[in-house]
Every structure is written in structure tokens, then in C-alpha cells.
Image 1: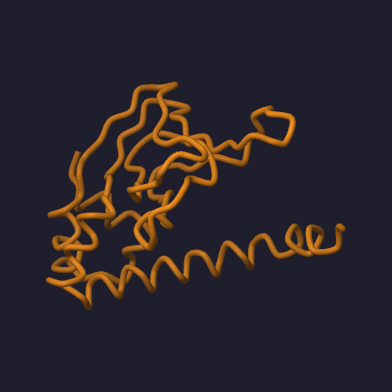
Image 2 (image 1 turned 30 degrees about the vertical axis):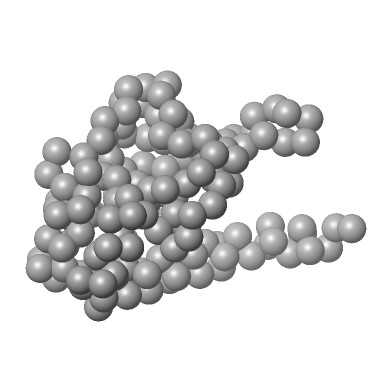
Length: 151
């Protein structure tokens, strides 16, 4: 798997030059997950961002009754686990390989080291993450309104 090509295909890196892509490709770790394997689990510590290179990942979370509820799928060119780069914390959902999956992993610790060496590149990625989250909020505005209306 070509790490740089996987990063280029992801919207978080859409405004990056080839040099910027190479900065993150240097810390990106190629990973392979067979169908049915877990990338990360709800309520477990989150320490990495994943960029999906190929395949499909199913996101799910447990409801109060303890049942798994499907939240959606993430495919090639998409990211998941973005919050782990910003701060360590528990995962909000479980990510399971719905097909064989290849991905690039960027670990929190490696990103933190890179912030001292390449702060502009890291700031650019953080702005990409903020833009990504902003779009998700806009895309889910109606669902969020319905949650606010409930007591």
C-alpha cells in the first residue's frame, strides 16, 4: 500500500502539497484488517487516526439495553478516529472491518512529536479536521435539532 497515495485520497489532506503529504506519510503506518476484525472498540482508549485506503468499515455503538446499533459505514478515502489526534480519550463507537480493509494509521504520540518539528503542517491537518467536523454537524443538523427537542 502506498501511504502517500492513501493520504492524498482523503479530504483531510485535500489542500496539502506533495511535501506536506510526505511529512505525514513519514509517520503513517500501513495497516491491514481482515473482514470481521476490530479497528477500535467503543469505550476503549483512542490513540490513532485511521485513513481508509481500501475496503469498508462499519461503525456501531451500544444502546442503553446493550444492543449494537449500526451508525454507518466508512470507505476508501475517508477518515475515522480524528479526535484521537487532538486528545486522548475513550472511543465513542466501535469500528469493525466489514470487508478486508487496508488503512493508514497516524498515532497520537507521533503526531504530538511532529507538532514540534512541523507545526504548520500539523496546524493545517487540525484545520482540516475542524472543517470535517463542521461539515458533519451541518450534514446532521436536523437529527441534532430533534435531539435538542427531547427532554
